Amino acid sequence: MKFLDLAKVYIRSGAGGGGCISFRREKFIEYGGPDGGDGGGGGSVIVEAVEGLNTLIDFRYQQHFFAQNGQHGMGSQRTGKDGEDKVLRVPVGTEIIDEDMETVIADLTEVGQTVVIAKGGNGGWGNLHFKSATNQAPRRSNPGQDAIERTIWLQLKLIADVGLLGMPNAGKSTFLAATSNARPKVADYPFTTLVPNLGVVGVDDVEFVVADIPGLIKGASEGRGLGDTFLAHVERCAILLHLVDGASGDPVQDYKTIIHELEAYGGELAAKPRLTVLNKIDALDEEERAFIKEELETAVGGPVMMMSGVTREGTQDVLRALRTEIDDNRLRHRKIEDQEAEDAPWQP
Image 1: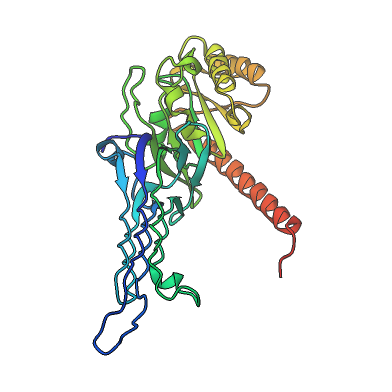
Image 2 (image 1 turned 30 degrees about the vertical axis):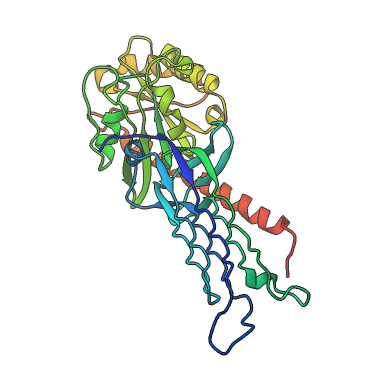
């Protein structure tokens, strides 16, 4: 299945049915009076987050979605049938953005979450509603409420605990393949990874999700390369795993390039917790490992771990460090939620 993380769709809710003008006409009933029924309500356009989807590819082949109009009212006080809703099923992690590409309408982060993005029109009143002491035979009714038309964008941001960052060919896909059930394409050339990959990683009987995105290059924030297109997929991650290729020739500069692109991308991405790891140490001798690690720690301003995705040396230590950070992040979020609940005004 092809990967698509951005789609433009056109939607329209259902219009309400018009009210009916009708009078009761039966034998032996001289003054039957008005009996026009109300129109039915139009259907709404609803977006729902569901399991089993990880791409917006379905919206490439169908971009127009219309809910059903409400049925007009009928005589004998019969109300028209309501129009059926139109439900758009999207992957968990989908943002619904207005046509201006800036205003976020909703962010669906849990299975089963729904949002009405175009409400159906109300049905019009039949002439029965307008009967009064001074007007026993009203000849008026209301038309149904008009439909709502709008254009929206659907943007998928994968939900993962860990986001993999690094230059092209830094070993991100190799690490994901070695530690999870994911099988990304692995080869010895840049930009082997063209779309994000998700893998479930397990360590010490605890599982978490890792997202691998295409590598970043210098100028990515200005549109060069592929990685800037997919940086949104690691915005939700609790921690970023920055893999630095120890055999690249200039690992320190590679590290600085990625940090610069994160800062240029903006938002909260650059401020997220990061674990920096010197990768491909199987290609280095002990002296080279120690030298590069020391140089990298100076640039990072903190500790740097070492591992090899090919031989799996050090991978368990990296996974345990990631797990600790994820647990700490979840604990922080729980404390924030508890504090917000305590500060919220009491409602009877």
